[in-house]
Length: 293
Length: 252
Image (cartoon, rainbow over all chains, first blue to last red; front, side):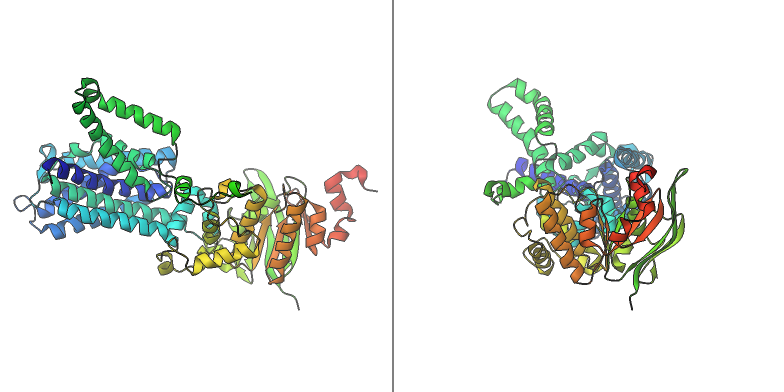
């Protein structure tokens, strides 16, 4: 496998994991623009635990899960104030959370502040790929349980969900916390993949992109974030390859403009995301009732 | 000896300065079919929302089967045998018919049971939901997203979903509204069938013909107060009820 390909596949794996981190709350109707906050906590906790020079020197097999768990605990505590907000205010609250985390870490000399922090243990594709597959299977399984049905019901109509015995707050807290767990996992894996982390890796643009993976992929099915992350990782690279092979500076230099136009078109034609329930129904070849009667 | 299943005692509710429900008391007998009627704005749906826990009471108490549920959180109430349908269809638009019906089973599931896959293959929960749809004559639509289904079908799916909670008391908010004669007959059959299994029905309905065909008991509300409780036949001769519906001039 070429270095380029394995580097791209590693990025894809990481993007898929963070997409699922944001998907889980989104599946219950919560928009989380704080992906970077989770990633920074996971990345720095994982890095600090692992680094033998500046940190505690723990093995990678311990530092990564512990980083994910600590992020989940923070997400759990944070979910109570954040889940009091709704809609666009929740977007702002989660965004503020990410900014606060970034601000704190930038001023934390123990982990190098703005200079960034080196991480020892290296997690290559052989580690990333199985974990990514496990994350996909976990989310797909979760959505197929009664708990998943409750999540999707809360997304559609929380008042009715309540009347059928669903504890809406608990479902929301659980989804947000599990999202935090995956976000921390992503951050820790990222640190171990690149062996160097800085707060700037997870800036505002990152938060927006991850939310777009999920919203453009579709929040109705567990396939959405997978498709969204694939699209956002692969299409810019394909546009680059296309530009190089056509020797066209317009495509090579303007690929992000082209990509932007593509996003706008998708929002116009697939406002509920690329993968929707109706699409899956059609693909599975079930006859619709209209066709029969 | 008949026992009451639902008991309301001096229930009151205000929104701001407006008293929407004022000192309402009545009891619904176990196994009975009771209608809750009244002119628009009388407080029928508000009373339903108080019973099911959407709103909290200001004063009074509500009990079901002897259990005081006055201030119990809404999501706990259906575990005590309370289930309902809605005036405007409130099915989950992004779920299939079977998934919507399975939502009704939620209150009967345990926490470990909630982590068991129900979306893969055909397990007990799926079969139960499909059987319930079949016995309501809705077996042709299991996998479809409900938003694409006809109105009358969606109305009946709501009733089936409510039944999935295995309620003792089923609250139905205008189940026949907007249905044509055939659909109304199908609904009436379904409700009679449900009642025969021992479920108590409390129905908000405007159509007096429908009410007199279904219910033995009628509670009439006007401006948030109970003005009558008796049989549908005697309700139609009660001056206070006629006055509420038609105005004083028409009362002989």
